[in-house]
Length: 77
Image 1 (cartoon, rainbow, N blue to C red):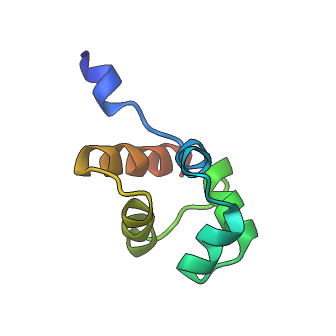
Image 2 (cartoon, rainbow, N blue to C red):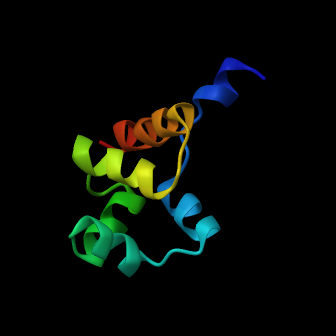
Image 3 (cartoon, helix red, strand yellow):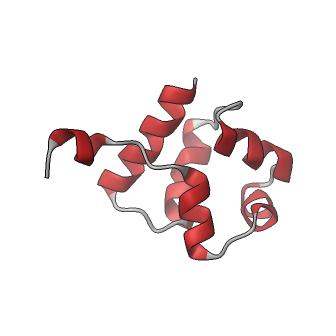
C-alpha cells in the first residue's frame, strides 16, 4: 500500500453511513445539533479535538483511521 493510500483522509459521512448511524444519533451522542454534524461532514465546520476523539470512539476507529479522520478535518479547515 502506498503512503498516499495510508494517509488519505476518510470522510466522516461515509463512516457514519456505513455504520447505519443517522446525523441525529451522532448529534445526540455529542450533544450538538444535527446541523453541526452536517457542517463537519461538508467541511464547513471543524469539530474540537474532544469531538474528533468522541467520533473516533463512536465509530470504533483504529488509531490509523482516527488519524485519517483528523486529516479530513484538517484539509477542510
